[in-house]
Amino acid sequence: MIYKKQYRRGLFTLSLLLLYVQAGVAQTDSLQTRLHHILTGKVAQQSFWSISVRDTSGKMLISYQPEKLVRPASNLKLLTSAAVLDALGSGYRFHTTLYGIGSLQDSVWKGDLLIRGVGDPSIDGTMYDGDRFHVFREFKHALDSLGIREVEGDIIGNDAFLEQQPYPKGWSWDDLSYYYAVEINALSFNDNCVDLEVFADDNVGETPHIQWFPFDTDYVDFVNEQMITPRTTDYDEYYRRLLGTNTILLRSRLPKGYYEKESLSVANVPLYFIDTFKKYLERNDIKVRGSLILDHQAHNWEKPSYKTISTHTSRPLKRMLWQVNKESDNFYTEMLLRTASAEKFGTQGSTELGIKLVKDFAARMRADTSRFVMTDGSGMSTSTLITTADLSQVLNQMRSQPDFQDYYNSLSVAGMDGTFENRFRKSPIKGHIQGKSGYISGVRSISGYMETMRQNTIIFSIITNHFADKTREIDRIQEKILSLLYRSY
Image (spheres, rainbow, N blue to C red):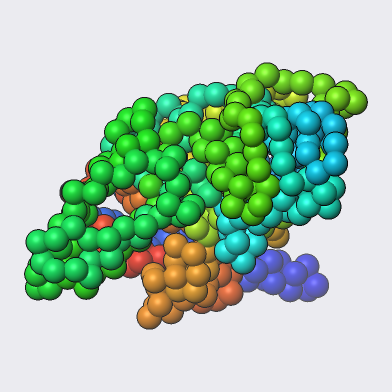
């Protein structure tokens, strides 16, 4: 009798289990059908889609062409920032040092000043309440404290810590005039840009007034061929830096009363750094008699001839990752990638070694890196190819890493901040996604972590390639898919 009861109870439990499994299969089938319906819509079917959705065990819940190679755009930063964090640790800080080579006689420094750059991207004011001269001010105060009012020697910039190749492979030449495609160098100031302001306050047909930071520097030469147009006309933008030079053509058409601000790249950025530093000193009553010299050689910085005058210590890496992921900053990404490779391999940092570092890390996260194609760390290169299956795999594995919380905090919150600030604002998804968006021509991507309506966590990657429609149409479809996932899990 006892045996029969146990047998019946076992049958009942087995039946419930079968019903549960069948219900789960039915739900997945239904969800897959609805996903297929979305992706065969008039707009979506003209593009290429890859989708991977996992639970926290790593199991693939639902997918669509997850093993196909796609261009990730800035979603590549999710891999790069994870590898950099693993290599350096969230507490890593940069130390940029001002050395003196010579001696002090009365108020005159008889010798040279040398700044050793180590790849700090944040000498731009971002971490210092917008004070872009923060580091230069620190150095100037150190000179003041020694009583130095004049430097008889040269200002030397040493950038040997990172390679001299200014750009990663695969960046488009017509992007190189703008802030999102600047040169990468161990000595970098103000994101390697000048900040142009244009004021269309004069009469129609006249040339608008311009000014630029830092202090209208003559390091660049603006050719101002812009024109003020009637108030009812549209703003027509045209900026172009002649490649290999610091001559920048301005040919925009601006409606009367229009104000425009644009950050434009400069060439030979270590020279820009020390040129600006020299001008800063001279504007603050420290004369510099010598020339500007670039030094690309590594030295023994412990030698007595290198006297440390001041060392600037940056904010920690975990704060810089906000620029990488929330703000999708290409410059920060490439600088951190080269720095991580320098520290990891004990040699001059390079993009090539940085890519090896990313691939090695992704392989440890059990991603199949044999098909990865990477030529940069930020996703600007159109030759970069990965799969959503591998990206979602790395995102899931990151959850068990010691610095995961700092990584997670660097991601944009849906409808709240970063590149998600103006997306999902009127959606139930608002506040329930922490992730990263990406865009280059023909590519729109979004990946990250979602807390679903049932308070489950899922890991997703949705990448769209080869679309000719407006980006907002692709955003609308991606949001529709994410809303479906939110309600279904």
